[in-house]
Length: 431
Image (cartoon, rainbow, N blue to C red; front, side, top):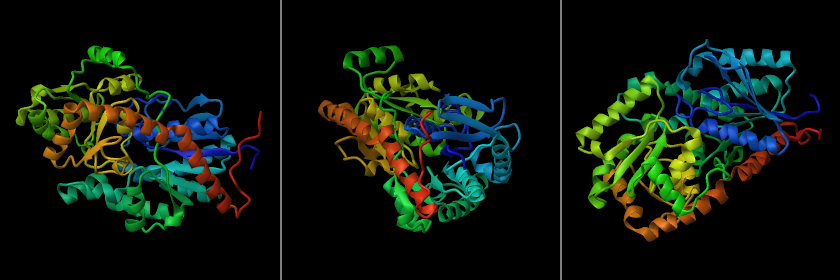
């Protein structure tokens, strides 16, 4: 072991980059989570390597900062592989990474892995290097499968849940600590995966409190004119994925318009892929069938540098997911001073006071969700409370610096326990 203490962070699916193009397949909140956490750890004085998969024409290395770099290791061929199919390629990744790390003289103190694929590979690497391993699931296979409807055999063929859940169980049993992001995840890990409570920590994701901030109303009005938002628009943004519940939001629109006659939806969904376009067309057909097609604006992909302004311009933000591990977009919108209505199918609603910082409802009950979306549009005093108190709560509770400090505490505890009390994580020597 050299004098430096280096954290290995694994996030191996999707398009991971220093400036990721969010909305590409398998590229969303988890990528942001890993990058922002790594940035804060580096600012605190730790050396961090984010390791991901190299494919297509991506470079091998991105130097993000003095103590932070992104390293892409090639495996599984030159084409994109969706996360559900990573099972077939993880052995190749582990072998390739270990060989290259040895060749380059990279030494690590601890592994921090993300999602089940990173966790499976991370545990193998941690055992090979005899270092502790901390795993953050982000999403749980058992929970995701439970929320899906349709042909059971087709779902299993598409998502390989049996294999995933088995691997998750083994990772949670073998790693040094599991970091859940919501109280609901903690409960599922304890009950469905039989993870002891002493083996768990609960740390929510963070938001960039410097970037996602409220602005004066004069600027909000200017943004609405520029971006085309109207007074009673409901906005959402995210990947073009079935679990995000855009169809549920569209089904809630008739009820919303009964309460607020000129209400509309502004949907920023997906990227420019063929699959995304096909899914959007399906949702557009649903809107036509329900007679609300003329009351929906399809915004398409929103570049990352425009995200905060779109949040600010929206009168109300909706998180209609039928399954949502956390709900980062809702927190970002709240931090920007926008009233939010969140799904109950996640863990976010357990963290705030209903009617205080935000509202929540069941999007699988379209009338219920539609009524709740109408509330801040109909009642200005409620909307003002949600805007002000929601922003204050989101920024104080989920600022990345605070989240990084709590994460370091877990890393330190795991490192100490792994080495019998004398192997705590240490920052690199100054200079």
